[in-house]
Image (cartoon, rainbow, N blue to C red):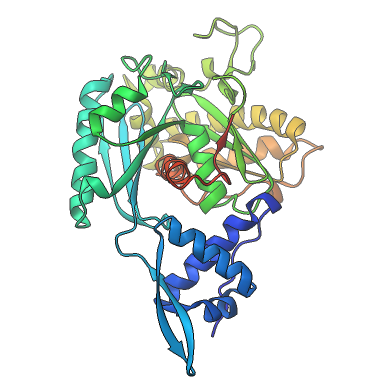
Length: 390
């Protein structure tokens, strides 16, 4: 029997890594005894027994009695009706949804463009309909959905209240009201933390003890991963890389300070840079034009990558992460954005070689939705490892 090898992890996440190895083995072999699971994963029989018991309680697997070589054995298989969960990311101009089973395997997904200045009431009504549609696609009903994780470009305070100042009309969104609207448990996560959580648990940062994630979109945010846990900080504004000063004589930022990164690299700032040459454009159209090869838009995106790379290099010099990855609309342009970011960091003598430090993201497009999915999955199953701390 081939051995299923899991990614290495830090000690606090060892149990989670072992659990993932068990689930992957069950997926690979369909129905498998606990003795065979021990052989397939390299884990001890006692460890397998404890993890299977936990997965049974969480509704991820089911067991049945069987015989092997004349001896009684416990057969383990995935539970077909395992609780579903939804990850949702609402940005300025798009809504991403992923529906996954209890093993975090995405079984359905969709993306919907949103109008400029969309309002919370109409957008959440649309989102509720899309959740029902996704459930219907996989032959499930809303009762089988254990909860919804919602990633927003906002600050998220203790108690779950948001200050979504990047989304006009979303100020002071009440999570209880949202939960009542869709009749499901809801957890709100800041989009940068969600992106970091997806990469930490499922992608480029898996098994990394100390990492940084930067989300480059209408503003620039960051998130810190320590020993497999996303550290959300002790105040709502944690990770606001866009409010690091980059120009002491620059423009006044919305926060009231002068020369923040967001005054140089933001949806509005980039739109202003191309206004004379291209006419009115928003960030989505700039990114699309850059991907299509427009030289002016590619230059604007490259300059943004360089400025963000400089700020990120400052942060990395202080925090000394093992690995850095990224996400957000600007990052979807690819090398035109990442190349200048990489060059800005390469010039710093105190940082490791960028080839070792920077890691291509596994989920450059829907990472925030996937991270929101992981967050609600952990809440449903009361799993501490990998959750958002703070």
